[in-house]
Length: 109
Ligand code: 2BA
Image 1: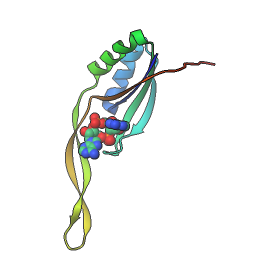
Image 2: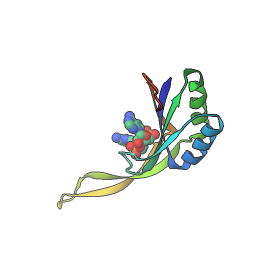
Image 3: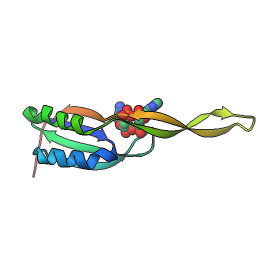
Image 4: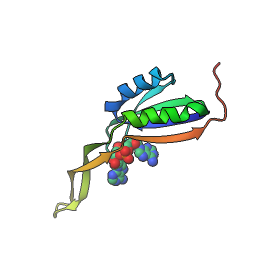
């Protein structure tokens, strides 16, 4: 069994959870925040049997799209006042960031 931790964009989360559930996967959805953009994203936890692992990745790949997002980044010190002036930068946020772990034990009590 494997544990998939998938960080996805909020815009894709509802459709992704529905698609995974329709395909018979159990999913836990967490509201999370990206460290760089400091914006909300969604983290999904899926415990999957090895034979269903690739199927779950295929669903994630099909649903999750890359998008451009505007982030506010601190600039280097500017001017004599030494103030930090935030400025907008454009970053490409991935379809999904996926971590995969082998599950040592799966216990339901
Ligand atoms: P954030 O940390 O808010 O990052 C959003 C996007 O900003 C990233 O998209 C990337 O395109 C860009 N970015 C992140 N750090 C950067 C930096 N130091 N300099 C320039 N651009 C930077 P993704 O790579 O698709 O990541 C989407 C979200 O997935 C991240 O949101 C974070 O919540 C999570 N994530 C990505 N890699 C991770 C990792 N190695 N460990 C834990 N979480 C990760």
